[in-house]
Image (tube, rainbow, N blue to C red; front, side, top):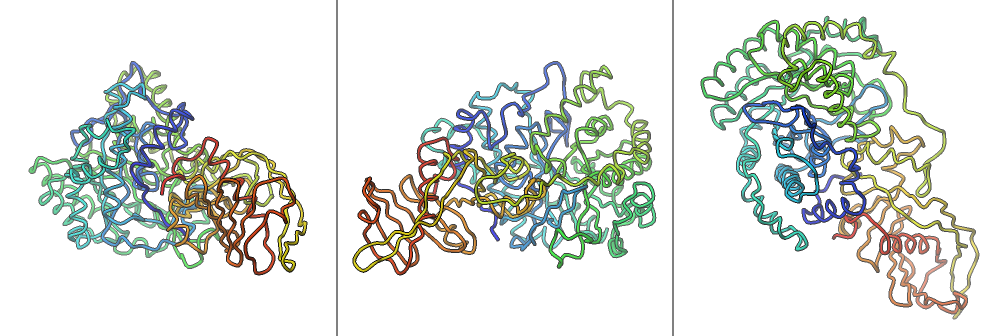
Length: 631
């Protein structure tokens, strides 16, 4: 299994600008899917007193963990970026695969996969890349459409949050000067002018608290008190759908929506905050925050614990977390309950089953921010965001609203009507959310597939990419020693028909499995397609995984079925090395047996030489994936 590795800042800068010029895309998101404003309309909102140009954002999940994730979310129109939740235990081993979007959405991940220091640096890198894009003039975007808020998210208990390491992370978010200055020096000379930009160093002073299911309500209250009083942070507390109670939760899920196959275990409610307890601490914390001149609000909701009844996740995982359409209905019932209790006293952040069909509805309720995860894991990925904002513009046109503020008038009545209507809306019923992604019955292979490109945008980390390779049709041979001479044995043909190939960049891949869900062929692109590593050290470190590393334009390493090979293309010579051979083949028209020198213990299969040379030439001479060329 691989793991996420942050990529050098300079390499990200180079790729971002070169790709925009050469391919009219950034991190594989096409320029046509960038949101660059809504002329004549004001989509801006206020969040803890700060202005954001839209209410949209990624939830604290896979779309907000690494620098390229943040840039992609921002390009799609997100302006309140809820960063991936961090915690003191930053050496987690998360089972794989961990994301199942076959129907409504399930996952078994719940925290960051990077260290705390890496997380801080990734968030700063993402913010700096966005600032570079704005300063470059490459995007035709008005200043008022670029206002962005970074909202940190931490968990999961008071002891962890008070620890020195989490406190150091929060301190770094409040003042990231040291990280910014260090990263300035990594900006390539080609883009040296960007070293002198006035990058924001107070990256965030807002925080959304995520707690474990079952976290005692008094501990939740003490955590927020600590963050308000000690760190002076504006705070949101994310609450759980268990606030509905077991009977109401199961009634809506089973009887109303038809998800009778889902079991919410009794243990999910044991020790979790009750509605009355939440009402009590919200009132006290709201009063405290107001006295301190700080913002306080709530977020609905966390995911819902259900029993793992499917065969997608490892059998060791007894529970999984539900998201998507059914969670939208459950979470909105809590929004309605909260407003009946508190009116419009406290801001409400929302994340549960948001898509282009309901984003405008949620905006009209005055929810800020409205964050999304599951829908962005479907085909189209980050490109789906622009349709949310287009739908919001159409809604504003229909209602004659020039701004989101105008649209969100009478939000109390809107909340009652909308949340009641969800209970009978067929869009959220199991019947409407049971169709599996299409499979065509063929097996995915290392090269050549249906080249539908679906796997590229469904990866939240941009790990899958296109690779242009010339069609290949050659006779393959095996070489062996015959006394002092070489013997050549024909062993079939090597045929690659597709010029357009798909590959995987290992540093950005965490084996989440989402590309497997939507690939029409069986096998999983993240497991089967050519895997490229960003450094020789990583290629050697993950020796159990097949894959490639292009060391430079002349040297490429490859591993096939666990066996490692190296090809060095020198002038007129191909130096080919394996575990039991080291040979050189001169370039020429004479029989290959007359052009070979070196040693071999047994037969040398030249199949892999052809593949390595084929890939090396493509990456050397054609448009390529710039990250592959950086060690």
